[in-house]
Image (tube, rainbow, N blue to C red; front, side):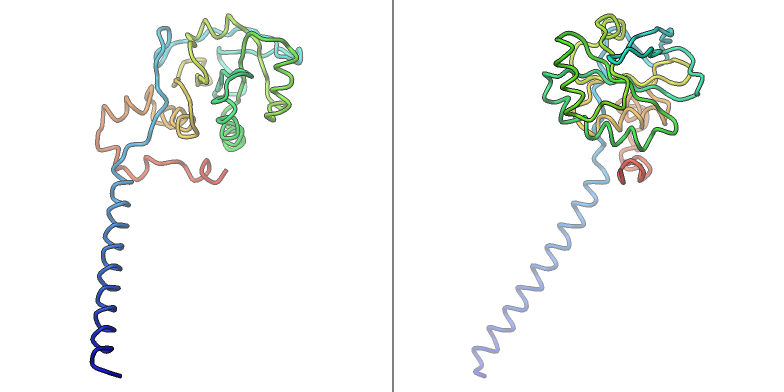
Length: 216
């Protein structure tokens, strides 16, 4: 092998090693950045609600004719997540798979109610059938949305087993949904409130999606 070939091979390996080192440093920096970036929480905007607001028990009738109790003290000691959606809301449809997945993973301590209003009954029944919501209570009630200050969709309100508002906000993604449960677990109204109290939380390893919710 000529001296030129040997030199070119050595130079090539040097370049490969340099690139490998650069890639390693980039991967490490991305990991550090991921740890430092705070998770996105649901936007908690509401003119009527705040954390700790007591929601008195109210009786609603779901689309199947069954009575559904919203708010108040739960005899089963479970929290209650009320998810507001509509058949003509495309963002709602994109979030529903994550909502159904979360409902399964959290069913031991939380029950889910779907709420909507307006439109024809047939339209809602088709929406239920196409999105897999048939196993859940589906309430059609304008007064319910107004009483909870819902102005935009999709929106969710999480109540404790005592009927108190735990967290709430616009939920446009799986992360937003999980932020409501995270805020509930940490006893804050929203992740924004938690981060405002303790900025170091952004680098807290425990401040992440739970394995149960991630696995689902």
